[in-house]
Image 1 (cartoon, helix red, strand yellow):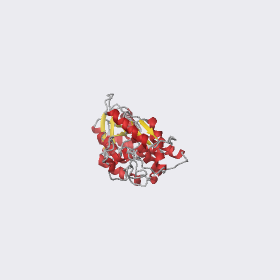
Image 2 (cartoon, rainbow, N blue to C red; image 1 turned 120 degrees about the vertical axis):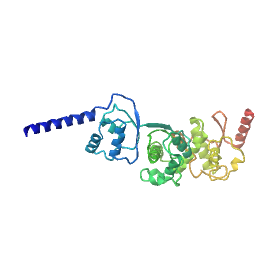
Image 3 (cartoon, rainbow, N blue to C red; image 1 turned 30 degrees about the vertical axis):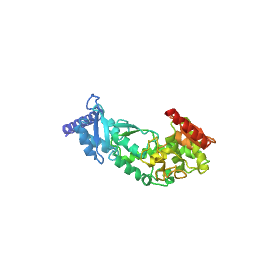
Length: 336
């Protein structure tokens, strides 16, 4: 019995030593990264099989035991991860929990002034989301995220044009499309709402202010001119004049970056055509950045009612329609 007990103790110690070795000593010193895909809904057993088949772990059984001990059943994420045989089991598990930045990450930049449709194109080009799935997620986002982001209750339409904040984002490959939309809304909450909340003298609603900011964003080539352009539009709103903003017509026509409009274009029938309809359009026409929103909130005090592009990125500002037309004629002559 004593000899059998000794064998048992030795066997136990050998198994313990093997377990420690297999857990904390990596499969290889080779630091080459491999892209591993963990499908959505994969079980621990399926994940262990994937890792073992890629020679990233020594034992599926040990992986399962380790995962059970640390209660990782629902903590391992789906997605595409960059893993190496040089990673010990604890590090592999940490990466699969996204506790480290070793998931296969994709960096995207959404420029200021982009539309939802253009954002969808960027996501599709980067392989992060199918455009159709993204547009569908945005269409239901107001309902899906209303509790998480109270500002959505201030949006009088399900169209969230203007509320997906333009910024640089980093996503893991395989990320769910709702997570992407959530990131856009979260950034809007952190970047725009503090500016909105800090200003107590509000002449427009949040939705109206974002809409005006989107027009300022599309009209201004120079950030330095944004407050002055905003001042012109505020003056026009106060006087109940037509805003007469070309980008709103281009948006209505489905060609948001069209810069040269014809007189026929200005007759285009749409609620977004501010040459025909007084006041602001029903929704923003693009995603404004922080500077455009600040300019909309804090317009420069001016008597100007008109501005025209000088064709070099700057604008000429005038108080009377006569001065405005005269400047337009001068620009036309210069360009002939």
